[in-house]
Image 1 (cartoon, rainbow, N blue to C red):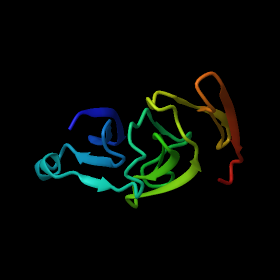
Image 2 (image 1 turned 180 degrees about the vertical axis):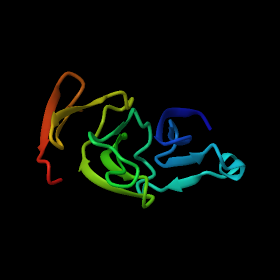
Image 3 (image 1 turned 90 degrees about the vertical axis):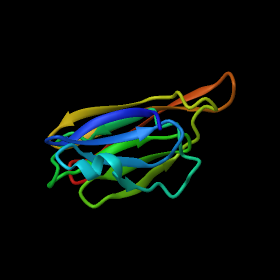
Image 4 (image 1 turned 45 degrees about the vertical axis):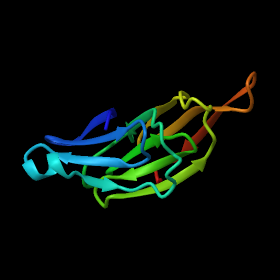
Length: 136
């Protein structure tokens, strides 16, 4: 399995994605069993692979705000590392190669924006921006 993204979600605890799967994997480096069999946060859409981004929300905290944004081939999802769950924010097809990226912009006081590209066809892309209030 080739790791594509890796982030620390708590002290010595990692969240990773692999290019060929749609799932997220949680590894606790303090637990040797976790290295052999990580916790899997399952993405129900197996075709939402080619994860290009895994970004913590502004104000990320492993207990109070345990969320990452994940950009896959078919959707942008919210990954909850505390409850080992994933929620689809948007179903937006990526390019066939899966290389489009997202940008998360911290607007302060818990507000943020998601900025990303959606491929319309071979020659046309659309840039989308979604704003979230601090009560998200």
